[in-house]
Length: 260
Image 1 (cartoon, rainbow, N blue to C red):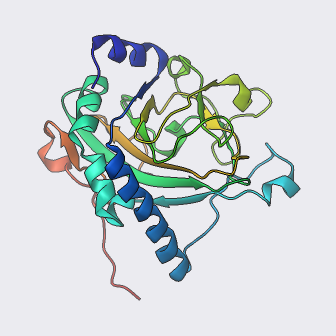
Image 2 (image 1 turned 90 degrees about the horizontal axis):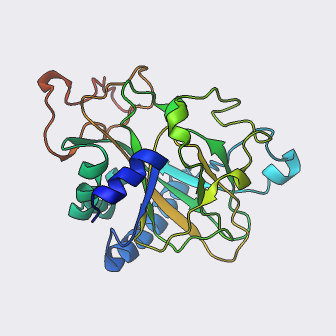
């Protein structure tokens, strides 16, 4: 899918857009999967609004914005597992991370038309810090995305600054780091935007009449261990490429409690 030139671009800029990673037919199946997940979540009364809160927008405007987000989507629908482990995805990841690639978690984000919430600029690092910073996000687009419907913006090269202090619930000061500061990354359905978890990124609200659906897969090198035990999901540890050289660290140590 990519060569040495593209891999070097990622190392220098902290992001890379790769076209047509997932076939269109698979994208349509995932779109249908998203709708079914939202319906099941509503039925289970788990259909919460995940819009960011804070002082980056007036309170009355924040109330109007909506963001649907669910973790571990590959446990909800098999189409997401197929995308997460797709040979095209693995081909890119081994160029960006190395021969050994491990899943950290997955989630889906849906910005509905006209009032889809913005993401203020931030790094993903504060949510799940790791020692060697190999962690990256693969943002798979299920819809065409542009600035009108809230495509991602990145600040090229910002990953070289290392971890930056965040405010509120892990976002950067919106005056110092406005979304307009970032480079917009428009993409088509099936494209994947790969970006390091230290790369500053965010997205504007969806003001269009089109839905913006993304699925994010977080990957890392299995030898890159967490510095804090936080944000550990059930899917953590699944190998996408290569091998896990640490026999005793292949899965999180969960304690399972009976259902109440």
